[in-house]
Length: 494
Ligand code: PLP
Image (cartoon, rainbow, N blue to C red; front, top):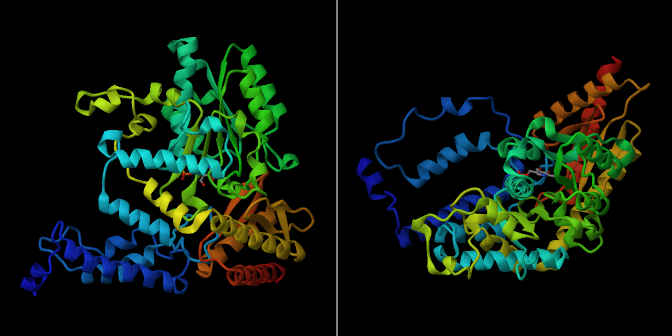
């Protein structure tokens, strides 16, 4: 047995063995997708479950791929929440696709580290080309394209995108007003802005008391009011502070609120602030001409970000960031150690993406985006988005027709925010009922949804956007939600 396992041992790099085992692995993953509906969508394991199942130390001798895959089936998969399940409706989606998967495979196979152009010229050049393609799909202003001072770059996540532009903006304003003014710098956003902005402020040394998370409410469907921004900026200027960064969101995390970009951008411009637009989730929808209006006003922004890895069939991670002024990024983030010096960089002939991001090393992520764009084409991608939005529209209609429920904010994209409706304005009981409903739904394993709080209301979120989701899954989810709600409401009465 020991000899057998040695003979089967994986060699670090053997093409024939890769071919054989690669087939086995692809079969394993294809079978996983084929049977994905048999798993509870949300993993039902208890914290620490895996410690009891795996040994305390690694094996001394090689084990076989079969042994490992058996353990994946028996020990790992029970602890996996199935984001690719057609009944996954939580958070926002994280799409896998055949094209995205193959792109990841190719990138893993080449395994280059594309920190500077010379370290793998195709990685940099393909990224520039694909980001220009994508900017055209979104009809972004020309200034975001790579032919001038602007350009796009792939970050790992929207959080990193926000961090790098915040650092670029910070250094830009400090060059103007002097380094000692850091404590006077003020950041603005709405209270619906993703928490990654606050984290970026912490990392960038922005004083947290200078972070204005301006209050929103249902009167604007949780979009930031330009008047609130103007008032806050004026107050800060009077207090001798320095407004320098505004983050607007198209498609907030809680409820897909869309901030009014043009009006916000105008205020940012008047006050010499950097204006970043975060469209991490909803940016994908804006490739469809009928949804493009939601980023109208993006021409006033200094930077724009969307996650192809959320809702556009591109496997994680692939967060697209465009800036109008690439030098703002490179002035803040470039390094030039001796061991990386090379002719192309010294002569300023090339882009070195290491200077547009936090780490030095970077993956060949553009391959998968390129493959997604080529193997599906823009029309299929647009129809993919449209189908999810239609399913969400149907779901919203079903909710609104049931007197036990109410839609909490009007649906804009493919997220529906709803809840069991309150009786006699009893918000406290209503919140508890919805909390119980969420718990019951997710522990059933039949679907997975998440929640948020809007104006003190506990709200259920159904985000439609998994690649395998069809009408029947949405209808089935609604049936399960209605049944669980009836049980909960009935037990209330008894
Ligand atoms: N911005 C918005 C609007 C989001 O919805 C999210 C995540 O859902 C993020 C930022 C953070 O995304 P990431 O995980 O790519 O950092």
